[in-house]
Amino acid sequence: MLHPLTQIGKWLAVLVIGLVCISSLTFSSVGSGTGTGFFSHWFGASFRVWPESVGDASGTLRVEGNVEPVFLLWGHVCPAYKAVELEWEMFHVAEHKGGATLDLEQMTVVAGDKTTAIDEDSLSALLGFSTANPRDAEHVATLLKFLRSANDGTLPPPSHHGHELPEPLPGRMQHFASGASIPPLQLLWMIAWLMSGLWILFRRRRIVPAEPSRA
Image 1 (cartoon, rainbow, N blue to C red):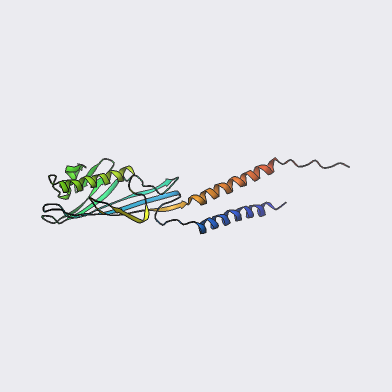
Image 2 (cartoon, rainbow, N blue to C red; image 1 turned 90 degrees about the horizontal axis):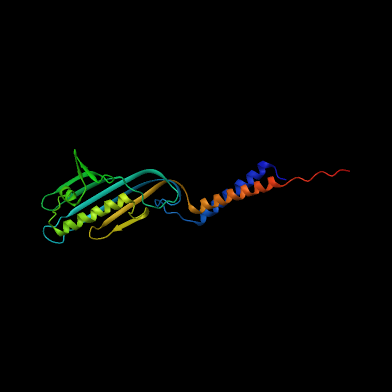
């Protein structure tokens, strides 16, 4: 029978060899947050406000948010963002730029020392849009829908390649997840390795040594 330390060494060697083989045969996209572990999330979305006719708003919008590290049993999902930063730079009529913090849980906007509820009217006033302009109203409604998606965790999942944002508020979104995690196949291998080791140990303990023969 092998020495216990030798058996443990062989058991650990099987684990390491299996993990190395799985790593060489699988690919994990950096920033996508796949696997089981602790992840922090960040997204940044840039929007282009294009006018279609005279009087429409024009400019750019920028929304950013982050979530502190949390444990996820299965990664590659969008978390619920509690707050985001909104920046804008508009060029219609007169140049108008600024920034504000949006509390997505309370649906309020904090600009300077003023706090107001987030709705179509307050966003329009904040960005310098006209509530009477159909194109401006469409932009504001799309932005509000995006903010609600950030809060309820339905934004596109983290991806190294990013996401294109469609009309009527086109742009591009980067969404990343980072942290310490175990990829799915490696996690399954570790579970199988542990279960097989426990089964072998349990089976050996059940073996009753034979009685010595008496002459």
